[in-house]
Amino acid sequence: MNIEAQPLTSVYSRLLLPVIISAGAVGLSIGLIIPLTSIVMEQRGISVIAIGLNATMFSLAVLLTGPFLPSVIHRIGLLRTMTTGALLSGIFVFGLWIDDSLWFWYLMRFFLGITGGMHWIASEAWINVMAPEHSRGRIVGAYATVWSMGIAVGPLLLNFIGVDGGRPFVISGMLMGCAALPLLLVPRADNSHLPPVRYKVLQMLFVAPVATMAGFICGFLETAVLSLLPVYGLRSGIETASALILVSFFAVGSFVWQPIIGWVADKAAFKTVVLMVALVSVVVVPLVHVSLALPFLTGVLLFFWGGAVGAYYTLGMLNIGQVFKDTDLTAASSMFVMAYTLGMVVGPLLGSTAMQLSGPVGLFAVLGLMPLFFIPLVLRTGGKNI
Image 1 (spheres, rainbow, N blue to C red):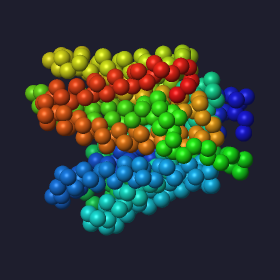
Image 2 (image 1 turned 30 degrees about the vertical axis):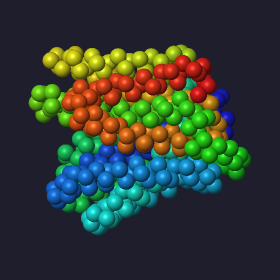
Image 3 (image 1 turned 120 degrees about the vertical axis):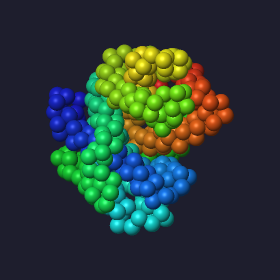
Image 4 (image 1 turned 180 degrees about the vertical axis):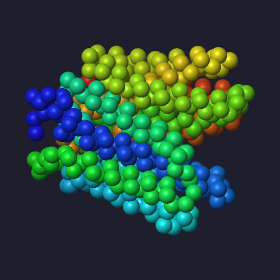
């Protein structure tokens, strides 16, 4: 299907917009279910360790099944993989309501990671396959924004629907299942012409080291900041409400900046944009640490920091689409999502350990040093080579 000659609005309306809407619905459902399950388990008196283990089931499933997804996508196609992932995910969310035993919740969250990963990886590969080269940055930025907004709005929606009874689980399951509906509007394409997968997913760690590292750093920094920044604020003498506002500034910056980053990436050299993002994410960390006595300045810095951290994901996904095609793209997308997921696990672990050993400053030392490993890797590459 040749989309290069079509107007951008036509590409959005027929091939891309339904997939972006579907991703937003999945993000909204996940944004509901993550805090919902944690709160319900806390109310039932379940230990913090058990709650944390339940939360890692999704990431563990993505890491274990990600290497096999390119072969699945090659067999049934991107659209069918997305549709199947959304429908099955909705069923597993309903399962959390049907049986609230701990072992069953672990099982449902693991299966939710498998099917959610199907939709996640296939939707990103679809966006990159169908996006015209000249506007890929803007489209990837729009996708990242809608996905992030869904995750961010989920907890806010939970305040209105409550956490008691089956209603929040039913609503979350319906949102997840309904994510398949926009996909019915997308023209079906024949996948029989696609070549077999050239690279195994884990080989992408060496074939695409910069994109893989960008995904890992985004997951590392994003999850560590969102989960530990409130604790950092409290231990630095900030009131609870103010500590939560810090997270809001970071989260808003994360999705507000992505369309801008994507637009800039369409106009400027990729390597230059990546280096600027990396430098901002390094420089802003000590500035946030020393500016806590000035709330407005801290909020502005966190807004830019959130944008820089989110840009790692946008730029990594963008560069994968620039370099890889067809089934190679699905393998690269799988590795990218797995790297991000691994960062989600490692970031809070290292950040909390550093804070435990060195106090609040330990967290910021880890967050500031991590991007420094990324810059030399970028400097050794040029243009679109990753």
